[in-house]
Image 1 (cartoon, rainbow over the protein chains, first blue to last red):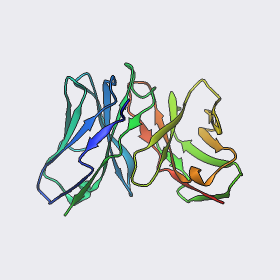
Image 2 (tube, chains in turn brown, red):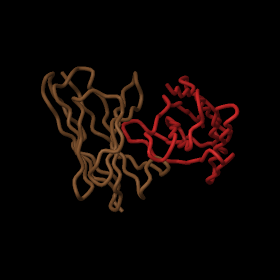
Image 3 (tube, chains in turn green, yellow):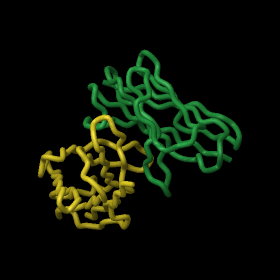
Image 4 (cartoon, chains in turn green, cyan):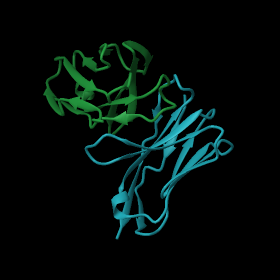
Length: 115
Length: 112
């Protein structure tokens, strides 16, 4: 099976712009989670989707949003970009109905740089 | 709020030795504890998952222990190899429907 695919791999934006990142989970996986990774804060949970519904949300401002499509593919959007949004954004999928009692399969992320 | 502590300093060991990494947490014990490996520029890769009622889990050269009294998990790599050099992350979940909280990771360097 193909792994989790994230596009694009690299992105450069300027402050105030918005960005959409894409994630294709492993075939058959219905749960998709998003994480932000920075050197200072480490890996932080953004949100999790299961069958097109957001089930969990981390402690991030409303500028961060996401959605999941019927084929389980997911997108996350960040509006009004700030310098502090520069990070590696990781997507992970997992199988079954449970989420965090299952291994998370991560993609290699999208590196977002804000100028 | 829950705090997860992993040694932020790099762990340097000689090839062939056993590497032991520590994950300490505060407050109440999680239902699930996971360990991941991350290489530079790549996403984390799942290694092992241990449940609250399990004391130990093994997979090939890897072993994880979970001590809810000490609020600690230990991750061991026996017969370490230079290819084991990476950052190792522990992550906790309080139930299946709750989010995964990661520690800051420990960088392991195995020297030939």
